[in-house]
Image (cartoon, rainbow over all chains, first blue to last red; front, side, top):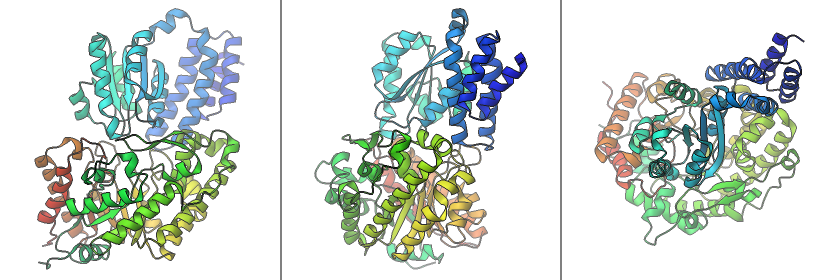
Length: 212
Length: 365
């Protein structure tokens, strides 16, 4: 297969949400001597961008996006170990998680997927994440962004606690913060001192790309 | 001018779109009502004890004087009884921490629990108790999670959505079992004397599912269709609550024809239907629609601000109702539950009701 065919295959595998095919094509790319970074940028990310655009215009819906993300992550597992250290370092680090006391993570996962597709290096802290974990992992990973999500009102104040924790630990000036989730708003973001509020995954990526 | 009405007269007139003294109001105050009980009550206690659950609604109605109520506890009730692990904090809404469905095989292992026990039993009994005390004052409805919501609570939404394609038949098998569970719950609610039953069909949202998926995995006859009919056949008004953004209004209002439809409006989300659009596009022609005070305003707004918000909503709604030749088919509500947090301002809930009483007269020129 030609380089174009392999990269096109990766793109199609993501768009169709076919994980097995995405993994196979990722291996084919490496065997054909295609750089991992090229396979990611010109195959996976291209495919995920198409998926994101189709989701935004309601041509496809959440199940298809989740399947596409699953396919992308499957291929990334193959490709990322082959990324040169310098290339990996260039990616902007993001720690992302759902605030302690909340387990609704579908929105967070969507943002994680679109950030990954947008070229960020995302560390997923999961859901019901204790405040201190956000701080510790951000420090440990030397991340430049802290992204927080919650769908529940009682846990919203946890976002402020994370931002306060970043201030206390001396990290606040080094990172941008972004919050999201149904009860959040721009006004709330400003209230708690967050740099950004993302209404949806696309907006979150746009705002963070704009910030860097 | 319409003469002063009591709550029941006003509600019944609104359902049938007759002139009212003022529009009805129901900020969806449920868990927050526990704060009005004379004995300090945690959320965990309120969601586990029928007497405390009922006492909350009774206290809430007395304090806020709303026209309607529905007995929302939280969204994990049925999943809890199906075997999911639920964390019940002191002051936070209970939520599933460990799903019961983890493998494709687990979908087929679900068994309908005895709904007279567990938290299903608590919510039915609690509903019975508050209905007994409030039914002569306001219109009371039970509240029940629809099949797809119960399944996503039992397995995790992400897993279910992917398995709609990866393990389709297993998902349907689980939905069939859950529909049986919901059917048992309908029979239980029918014994409580509640006037209506509100179904939470929140996955009918274009942010999540398209028409095809929603119809296949909830809307179709053997799931929602059967339960909606069963609700009416058991003497309860069939109602829907859907606080998701971009709701499937054509399917859920024009197709399912509920008596009452509770929905939310997300001003920042393109395509989210405003109250004016909902009324203008005919969704209130046969259904009483409730919305759309932003629930966050109950936490963060001043009394003055929420009064202004309510007045603006009333103005928008009254203008749209008149333009459509309607009299009263809109409830001033909160779309989603009023945040049950300790920081929610009770005075803001009361202000929405009071402002509706004061400025909710519909007088078309």
